[in-house]
Length: 197
Length: 197
DNA sequence: CCTGCATCAATATTATTTATTGACTCACAT
DNA sequence: ATGTGAGTCAATAAATAATATTGATGCAGG
Image 1 (cartoon, rainbow over the protein chains, first blue to last red):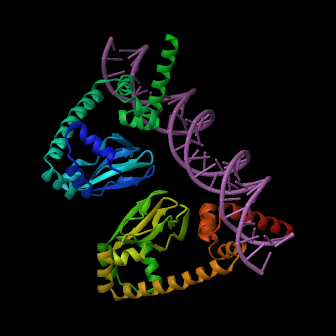
Image 2: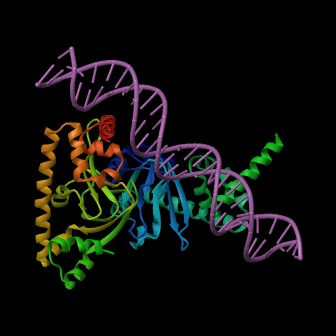
Image 3: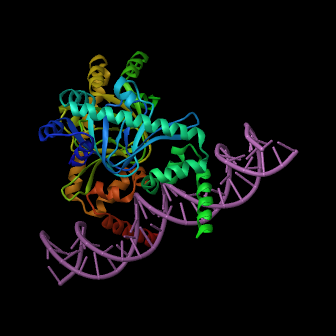
C-alpha cells in the first residue's frame, strides 16, 4: 500500500528494506471521500499526510467567510497544518479532499520517532521544509506583484495538471481572485488564443 | 447551544441548573455537513452523539459492499456505536450525516464521569437502553415476518417524517430491500390509493 | 407454476455544484 | 476626469452527480 510513499522518499534519500519495514509499523493508511475533512478548524493536527491517490486542499475561511486556499496536494505531496502539528495548538485551517483520496498518515509520535531512528528521514524532512519555504515565498511575491491574468498564466505553466483537476472557483480562491474574475480572465485568454490561430 | 439536548433529557428526568452547568463543561458541539462521517469503520467510537439538528445514519457495508442501514437519527435522537464505545474495540460500522447537522458530543470519560456525579443521567441512559432494546427487537421480528410492502407501510406509519427526509434508496437499505423493489412497492401503493379516491 | 423478490442494465428525473454573464461600484494610476 | 482592473450582487446556464424508475430476466419456495 505505501509503495508510492516509499518511492517518493527514495527520490531524495536512500532507504533500506529494514528502514521500510520500520516505517510500515509506524504509518497508517486512510481513505477519504470527496469533501471529507482530514482536519477541521479548531482541532489539533495530529498527523502529516502523504497523498498516494486523489487530491486534497488546505484552506482557511476569512471574516467574510470566504474560503482561502493555502495549498493543493495531489498524489506525491504532503499536507498538514505544520504549525498545529508542532505546537499542538488548535488549527485554524481546514483540510479536505477534492476527490476521493488515499493517504499515508504519520502521527506526531511516529514522526518524531522515525526521525530519530532513521536519520535519512530527518534529512528528507529537512529538504522538504526548505523546498516548501522557497516555494511559498515565491508564491507570496507573485501574489503581491502579478495581475489576475499573470497569476493565472503562471499557475497554468507550473501546475497545468492541477488546473485540469480542480474546480475553477478553487483555482480562483488559491490565486486570491473572485470566481467571476477568473472566469473573465479565462475568456479573454481564449479569445486571444483564437486570434492567433 | 445544547438547549435541545437539555430539553430531551428533561422529558425523562429532572435536571437542576447546577446539573446543566456541569454538563456544559463536559459536552462539546460539532457540525457535520452532508455525507461527512462521524465515525468510520476501523476507528474506535469515542463519543455518543445527540443530534440537535439534521439527521444521521449508521450503517455497515456487507461482503457484497452493499450498505446496510442500522439506524436513522434525526433531531432529538442519540447515535453511536455503543459496542465500540464500551469495549474500545474497532468499530465495524459507519456513521455519517444525511443532511448538514449539529451534534452534542459526550466522550467516554465525560460520559462515565457524568453518570457518576449526576445519578439522574445514569437513570436516563438506563431508560434509553431499555427503550432502544425493545425497539430493536421489534424491528428484528418485523424484518423476519413482514413482506416488503408491509415493512414499508409499517415504517410509513411509525416514522412518516423520516421517509420524507431521506433518499428512498436509504429507506430500502434500512428495510433490507433493493431500491428497485421499494420503488415498485411504492408504485403499487400509489395506484391503490388512486383507486380509492 | 405462480409469487415475491433479486439482479442487471438502461434511462429518466431531480438536485447540487460549478461556471458564466450583465450591470454596477470603487480605487487608483494616468 | 477618466479609463482600467478587479470586486460585488443577482441571475442564469451548463455540467455533473445523485436518486428514482422501468423493463427484462432468473430463481427459490409454497
